[in-house]
Image 1 (cartoon, helix red, strand yellow):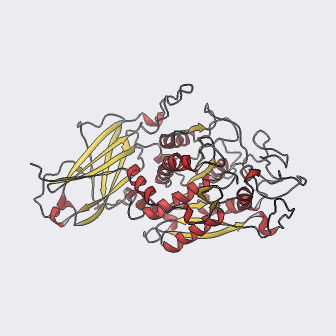
Image 2: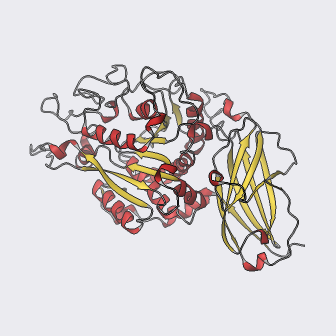
Image 3: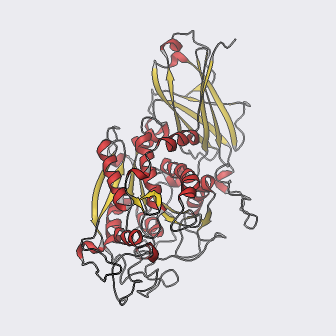
Length: 517
């Protein structure tokens, strides 16, 4: 007879709702006029400096370069004045510095926003992600292990001069930087940073040579200080040994599955996920992995796929960050087009954009160490722990198909077929206690969880294991689950915290069901 039962369902959505309810109001700091949900650039940097000061073991801020106006005069016409001085460009690094792993042993993920200045929501979403990571450390198990094994780097404002214009003079809908090269005396000048990178640079199908055009690519590849600051920083993050010797000549060669690193660029608007190729309507040689990543992100936000050979490919974009990061650095790369307006309304931002995309960003971070292989593996969708009469009962639901095929049939016009990375059966689901699977060595504790129907023979499985409570010492422990499919792809790790009391560990040990590795 069960005398007492307590159930802890580790659902990230529930944890996120609590976090969002308790989070600091953006209005604590200076906000954009008319949008109390969006911190101004000044308010944003003030809040990030405060966060770093409060959590020095989790967050550092580095000056990585200067905006165009940092070394050039402003503009004083009495109508749309631009002050002298410009801005520093800052990168943030969020990671557990005391995790015992050195920087070169950690996965790397770089997330950027503010490339196009008129898009108000992206920096705020990225800041909320940063705050979720910092405040969630040692409270949410997935966030905790991610920061112990991964560095999350963020550049909130790649184009700070332009952001000044977009906030000060919103009627101009400023997009580019403030380099006034060859565009007369109007307000259409500047270089589009997202057409200035050295990948398919100057291709007129995806950029313009007209200095007054919104997608002007600049006089030369990476001519702008903002582009240079970004590129130099990114090149230092990701290992150069995984790059190709001549990237554009070798653009049809796959990188394979051993490369490391994840890059995400956040833009608005329209509700799209984009990934290489973007400079042409064609698949990249690593489309299987990149499309699987895009499809799985779609399972969180239901955004359309904007990529080569997809039905929702809108137009070419040459010299952009996403193609450059994949083609030159060899990292998994994608972008978000969030919301439905450049100057997003607060209600839809808080109710839709934030809760849809914070879990998506966290999921991407789980794959940063080995994205090209991990994304092909099965996902542990749910994990729960129950305490029953001296037993710790752990259950999980794993699927090779659910996330990657969530997009199937979601559009009545564009009916997506099932994807090949999602048609394998679940081979096993391994449970680890107090050791991440990547750190597992002989002598560490792990068990193979058993299917509830006694057969691992399908793409989706519910598994479980019953452990005597005295398997654990009293206190808090971390449980990790990882699924492997029949093609031997290991998927992203899911984890939970479990508290075990002294009273539980002293109960008579029940029989162990499940097999120990």
